[in-house]
Image (cartoon, rainbow, N blue to C red):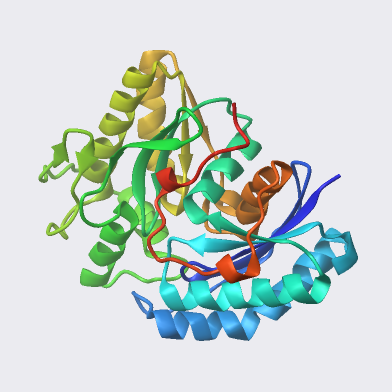
Length: 311
């Protein structure tokens, strides 16, 4: 049995999760809720104030002691610099105090591996949509290959900016509140639709609404499926919770005779368990991060990581 604890804090969520051989033992988290938008320094200050409490909750909920942990995983990047550093320092300290190996994890791959674990999908085309990232991804030859991505801002950031302009609340999140308002809509307003090959563009048009944005994402995902011959789609990332996005992607999948996989807010929103799960996969293949290499990076692409745990 291999038990991995994961620390996540790349944006406004701080979470600590524990995974044991594919079972989520605990996954508490906190969210830094502010007026629309959040500053890196303020977010880091929030994380420092609560991270030890969240760590204690994770151990108590799992019924484990530090001696039961085999590896300490943390988010290496991508993300906001100050929050990433805060979490990395705590993870390094914990690993040294407990005498455990340390492992830096790519945030995006954490989302993918958590989605694969929870949904039991086999080899899906992945749509990764969040506040900081928008990518269409498929696995090939020990890499998660990016088939298409945003060429400017992420879809979550687009929705956040839209919410800020029209003063939609940030509690619990701008995207959630936009989704609830959109459910009451009765008229579709035609807006610019910018798909450039396999990439998409969201910037400069703050009057975007989710119907147009999601249609662009469904189109590029379908193109990647056709290229890969894939019959599965997995949606991950915080925006992946959106029911309308899942519904639109489901229509496309049904027309292609494909299967759609998605998770709920427990696992699609940033959380510690996803870092623990990716760390668990990596640790089983002998991967560790030496202390002198345990830095963070705000830019850490999904396709930079060698995926040693998949055939």
